[in-house]
Length: 247
Image (cartoon, rainbow, N blue to C red):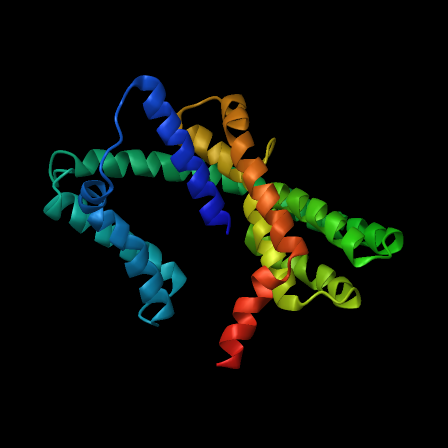
């Protein structure tokens, strides 16, 4: 649902830009044909992970190998002698910047865990909330803050054991809770002022962070609206699970 909502917005925005610039629409099939090798990448990666051919970590290596072969020897956009060393050098600089950002984020995560901030916040929610709807509202606000300040792996270890008993007390299905948790943390990564992806994008595309804050607002609005649908319409999450379970 989230991918569909963001895709529709991007298509609409792209068409409005083309109309404003007086540029005609490009035919869909030639564009797909031209991007065929790139379009196949998610199929290769996801199919390999769920087919048991490699793990999620090994999928990163498979992605690099696949794109190197495609770009250097099939499409030819990158010359293996003239261009590939430059690409590797630029990638190394980008990775170094990302590691610095992740290091700072990990330091903040360790402080939050040491100060027992998640436990204090959830203790307040437990004492102040009596209805499932109010709990879900506060849970979303809490998880959005967690997504801004903590990486998803630390949040899985620290936050999930805290919120799961509360959710069960309010009758929330664990599968539904898991989807709410992941959706919130995904949004938190792009939420101003400290969303991790914003800093990575600012570094990668050499754009001021304040400009990225403004650019993300339409996407945040769409994702928050879809988050509300996912949160308050459990069937969006549970119906596919029940459908497959019945088979």
